[in-house]
Length: 393
Image (cartoon, rainbow, N blue to C red; front, side, top):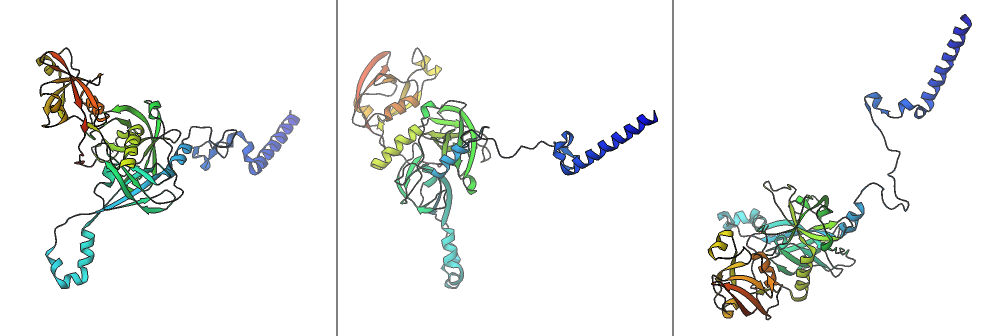
C-alpha cells in the first residue's frame, strides 16, 4: 500500500509540474483559459482575427452595406448658402466715432445669414440636384465635395412645387451618382440616407422603405414620397437616399418631427420624379406643366349624397378661374369632373397630376357630371403659372 501511495504522489507531482510549465509558456493550449480575460472578472469570446471574407476577398461574409455607402458617398456634397437679411439699423451706426472702431464689421455681420444642406452630383458636367428650400433666396452657394474640394455653384433653375433645384459647378473629375429604378423598390427594402446632418459632416444612416406613394402630406404641391425610417435630420435635405447597391432612389426632403430631430418618419422624392424635373430644368431652366384653371375638392360621402352620386369618385369643381381654359371650355362651378382624356379621376391629387402631365396647347377631353347628365367637353390645356414656395420645409 505504501508503494502505491508513493507512485500516486510522484505522478501527481509530475502532472502539476507539467501543468505549471504549460500554463506559463502556452496558456492557449488549456481549454479552461481560452475564453477568460480581465483576471476572471468577465468571460469574453474573441474573434480569431480579421473578418472572414468571400473567396474573392472583396466583401465580408456577414451582412454589410459598406460597398453601397462607398459607391454613393463621393457623389453626395455639402451645400453652404448665405443671403443678405434686413436688420434694424442701430442708431449708433450713424456715429462716425462708433463706426470708426466697430461699425463696418458689426454691420456686415448683422446682415448675413447662413444655412446648410446637401446635394447629389447627377452628371459629370457638374450638375447637382438638391431641394429648392435648401438654396431658396440664397445670394451665395458654395459646394464642398467629399474629397475636400470646394467650388462656388450657380443656380440652373428651381421648381418650388416639387421642392427641387439644380445647381452647377465647374470642376473636373466629378463622381456622378448611379440612378436606380424606383419602380423595383418595395416596402421593406434596405435604404441608406447620406447627407450632412446638423453640419457635423457627411453621415450615412440605414433604414428600410416604410411606405411608397405617400401623398396628401401638405409638403409640396406634387407629392409621391418614399417614406423611410432611416434617420434624416436638418442638413440632410437634398441628400441621397440609395438602395443596398448604392444606386440613387430618392432625394431626402422632409421629416415628421415634433422636436426637430428624426423620429423615424422621413420622406424622399422618388428619383423618377426628380429626374423628370431635373431634365426639364437643365433643358429650359424651368418646369412646364399643364393647367386648366379650376379649384377642386374631393367628394365626401355627404357631397356624394347631396349631388346624388353613386360613389365618391371624381372631384367637385368648386371654382373656375375667369378667362382660364376651363371657363372657355364651358366648365362651371358645381360640375363633377370624373374623367380626363378618358382616364378616371379618383381624387383631386390624381386629377392634378394628370392635368400637369398634359402638354400646354394640347386638347384634352373632360367628362363631367352636371345635373345628373354626363357631358363631354373639349379643353385646350394652358400652362401652369409659376408659384413661389411660401414656406421652406
